[in-house]
Length: 105
Image 1 (cartoon, helix red, strand yellow):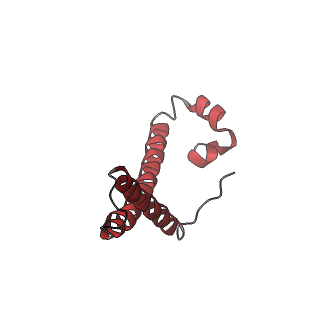
Image 2 (image 1 turned 90 degrees about the vertical axis):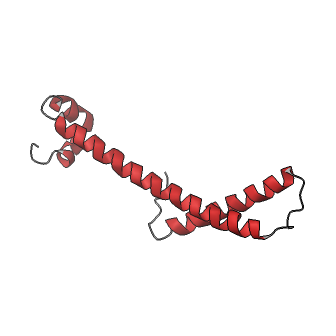
Image 3 (image 1 turned 180 degrees about the vertical axis):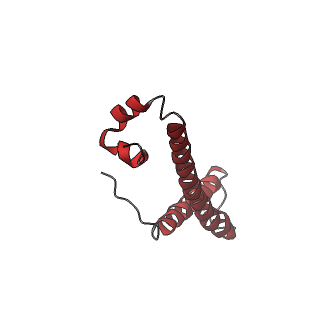
């Protein structure tokens, strides 16, 4: 079972994961070019830490946005098809039918 992350810790965790991923990518690309690792250390800070943290936070925001959008679209479609597919919805949702259709339960 996956433990839920609270909204206070999620940005910190995403920033840490993104920053470590960003630094790893910078180090890996410098190794591929056979350049000294710390000849330009600002690349590690700017592109690695800040870029990685920003990218990871944007990924978390996009995931939350599209999960909400998907739920809204599914609920809209269920509301449009309620009269037509009512028996299927009752069979599919079971005891949760009243949660999605409180007025007809």
